[in-house]
Length: 262
Image (tube, rainbow, N blue to C red; front, side, top):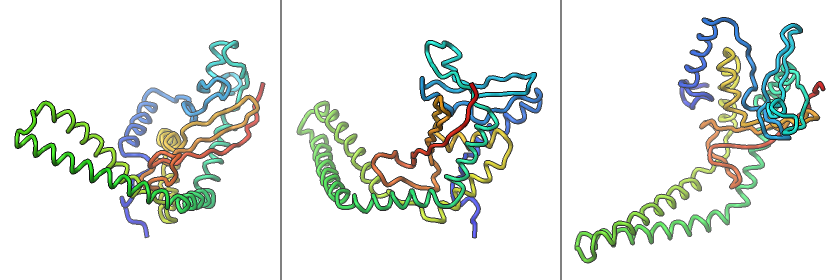
């Protein structure tokens, strides 16, 4: 059973509306070239974005390094990557890695095993943070009492009180992160895939927005090797369990090979 609006969408309503407005603008001014990967393709050699280079008479379009186009001395990557082939490879990678069952399940199983290994250390860290939290709360209460009783000048207490409150807020946030580390279940993954599938079935601008939400960057080298960095930033998938990953985002890499022309 699918409950409408029970999970946040892969893209927000604001993003969808912006993509729709772009589509309407395109329809008013005429047909415009549509390049799915501009902004997320990076040259591994120099780090610059890949941009489009078109040859209209032969109806050809390639992604090329923008750093190389500025100066051959700056970047040695002179390769031209066929637009249609590269975009097809990326969509196939999204299908195999994200949309098809298997890869994410295996990945999160590894995360779950890491969580279990770290449980003892996490428990010690939580106890330490809780003690620090209690100490700060007691010190803040004492400072407030001194201010009310005028035992010490107010100006001497305010800066210290503000410092303690800031530290307390940081400790509280850290404890909350420990409490929200979970691994998505199968229903979460299925819901996420359904939302992504629906977004990728929409018009070009919504499809591009969803793809750019999903992929942080794709690095391309001269030999056509592709490195994918995926960001699973949907709230449906909750928080990540490992310390090397940022909260509510999963980052992992996959590699594919793309042919290229000289």
